[in-house]
Image 1 (cartoon, one colour):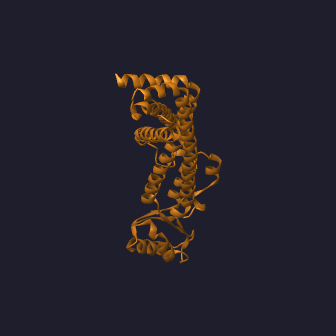
Image 2 (spheres, one colour; image 1 turned 60 degrees about the vertical axis):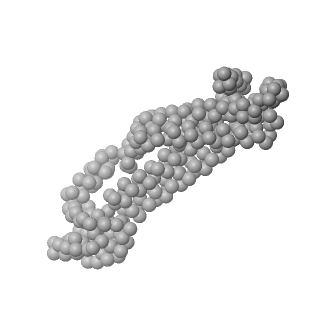
Image 3 (spheres, rainbow, N blue to C red; image 1 turned 120 degrees about the vertical axis):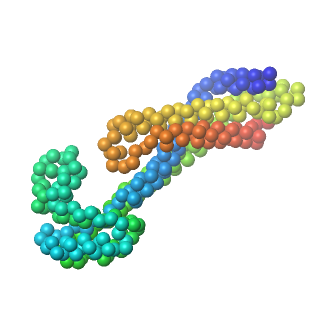
Length: 291
């Protein structure tokens, strides 16, 4: 009987303050969407870094007129180097094929480049990509070597950009979360004030505090859970419409964001929103509302 009464009061309270309830759900949905995006991006940055750390190479570009004996000597030294895990020689024709594949969306550029203008190279996989500067120091500037590049340094700017976006998303989520909690507290105060006579009567007949406070707390929790479900729906829609849709070609350059990674966010968003909303509502009632 008590549970039935509490639940009826919850839905009645939400309906009485429908405009504030809708505002609370929308604000919670926006803040949780940003939080979910931040967590997703945070995890994806780690996935991308791990993916590229195991696939990055040091590329030793050779001079065009290099003699075969010099090429063989460099090949031997690379394969004997304790820092190196694997060495692959790429001649000019193979370099042209790689170039054509990389820039296949720019046919004019592909037509303008011939194999003779591209240098042969050794593509070196390291035991630890962190040792790349040491290998570069050993081979850079020697006879027959035109240039040595570390793909990690090239992609570091991308990692830095993703890290900045990661932090920005979490900051926006935090600001939105504070706004959502203030709206929760305000909604609870308005709800308690509108039902102050009912509260007073319940107190007079000896109702315990938890029984009086329960409908208000559950109102906040219910609105927060609805907001988290909307937030989850937004993230799912973003995956199919944006990541796998409009910007599919862009995201082909990095490991895909899996549906499993998004599904993991649902219990996190629901749990965080429910717990924080319940605590906020309880503190509001405990210290600001005389019940």
